[in-house]
Amino acid sequence: MRTALLRGLGLLFAALCAFFAYYTARLIYINVFGPSLTGHRQNGMYVGAIAFPLAVISFAWVSLRLFRLASGKNSAPSSQETTD
Image (cartoon, rainbow, N blue to C red; front, side):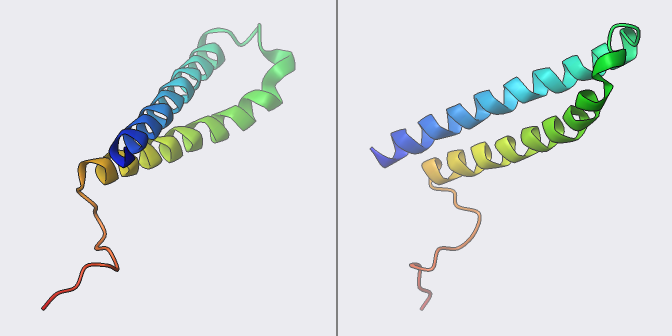
């Protein structure tokens, strides 16, 4: 049950990552090829140029972390593990 939940959350965050990656690429395309269409929306595009890539990185990191937890490959040692 826990593994399925972690994988489901990993997929959700991966989908969010893909969504914001698409909008980052779209934002770049619109800024490069459509400057006459975007004159009145320039400030929002600057905010998106910072926020969208940060969202992509954040969601990708969370998604990878959840998939690693689901597969049992935890990158950091657990506090419950003891070495003798």
